[in-house]
Image (cartoon, rainbow, N blue to C red; front, side, top):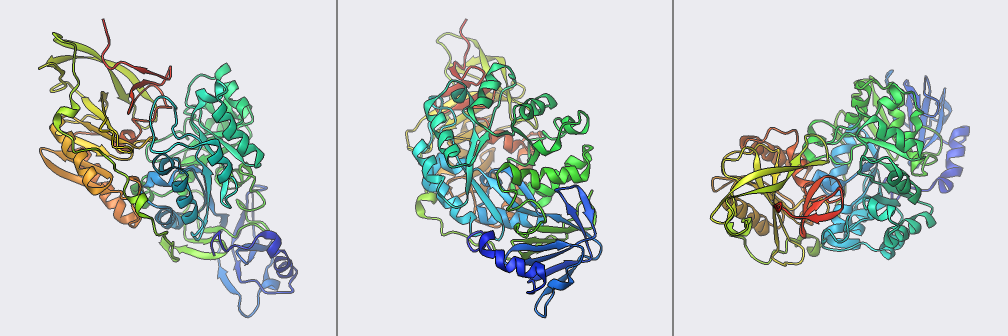
Amino acid sequence: MTPETLPTWPDSAASLIAIAAGRAPAETVVRGGKVVNVHTREVLDWEVAIARGRFAYVGPDASHCIGPGTEVIDAAGRYVIPGLCDAHMHVESGMLTPAEFAAAVIPHGTTAMFTDPHEIANVLGLPGVRLMHDEARRQPCSMFVQMPSCAPSAPGLETTGHEITPDDVAEAMTWPSIVGLGEMMNFPGVIHEDTKMLAEMAATADAGKTIGGHYASPDLGPAFHAYAAGGPADDHEGTCEADAIARVRQGMRAMMRLGSAWYDVETQITAVTEKGLDPRNFILCTDDCMAGTLVNDGHMDRVLRHAIDCGCDPLIALQMCTINTATHFGLERELGSIAPGRRADLILTSDLTTLPVEHVIALGQTVAKDGRLTVACPHLDWPAEARETVNMARDLSANDFDIPAAEGAHEVTARVIGVVENQAPTKALTRTLPVVDGCVDTTGHADTCRIALVERHRATGGVTNALVSGFGYTGRMALASTVAHDSHHMIVVGTDAEQMALAANRLRAVGGGVTLWSDGAERALVELPIAGLMSDSPAAEVAAKASALMQAMRDAGCTLNNAYMQHSLLALVVIPELRISDMGLVDVTTFELTDLIETT
């Protein structure tokens, strides 16, 4: 069963009624377990009958639903909990296609996802979003799609491969798996009544669908209230308890994320565990998870365990990644709980705290047992235009990464992007650096690297140069990536211009991905041939290459947790304080371009 073939509840009603009444047999019955009811936060000695991909009967005794052909699953005293929902995530962040992402997370109990493919939207526009949507509908789980809202994320501060328009949004609202508008990252545009942003939100509201939020500012004054008034219904950019409280007080849902590099649950969940706020307005999500995290650590099961470890009651934490999510997207009658008519998504687990995921049913069929996928996750035939997206005008040389200083200068004071471990925001730093042969020299300066943004959509040949601190790299090295949220040009960070040129040219040759070079040799490569963002190889293979990349980064001196995620976000010009784009260095506190070298 897939979302494409799943009968609607009305189409299934007669069959479900007959089974619940005992007049017809169920396809599957789960007996001998303890059903967790997330509507009431009860654990009940109940049984479950399933047919046509939906729950038909949920009650104390399903024996009347069993016929000669019914599959009876003995839960053997285990808990029967709803399948887990990820309320906000980006498939592309896993470096995987929707099919391979589904294959990776289904064994972890994730049966529903709400994905915003704004990464591919920046590269391929609306046709790219449609490709993601269509592959998602083929999967043996529920992958809903939010139409990307902001490509570019900050108009006038970056150039994307394609732009998203209000007409694009209106068209997407007619597609079957679109549930709303993706995160509205252009919060200054909303605050200042930008007509394009308002038109996109209006098209979503007119379709009766959910507007996703993204308010990446610590200012909780009038600007925040203006943003809330614009219509965004949720926000995942909170990093502290005050952020979570402010959002739910405005009628928004606070989405608390635990991704590969974002650890924002522990600092916000105290709004529930200590302040006692109504937990139904809090939701758990991942936002960005790399393939290595999915394969080695888990997905929403990892987030759920973490929330419990942070002191949250297990049943409340479970609500935060099941029924709360479904309710938020207007799908409470469709998924998120074990109740009649809902999509038959459930997990058998022997412990509600450690949450071993022992048996997963999605859309009425067993999809995983004991960590092993038991069904196929079909691929699209991705077209050539989705695989040929690294459009650099030429190979680069070391000189392309020079940072010229004023004539006669012996040293400069330069603005530097400061990486903050485990958080999306950066710091705006300054460094005094020497000038050698007319160019800024970072050689020997502790933890100050070069960073470059290489244009790769329109073959302009443009290279923007700046400085970054926090990675800890040493020696002669460079890391290049065609994953560069959100415009997805190419980001190159390095201590040596020659290594930067080698890394950039390598990605041009292979059609996208991530590569690390040191001392003239390639130390790691993750090929991402689809839009320069994704691989259609299995998650375990991508994870192994990503693991080798992480080791190569450590070998080059980097000690940050999941530093690649930090690298890939350095061009995200909607999160403070300082970022790089193809147009220059961006001060995200003022949303203006700023000079790299301070004038005296």
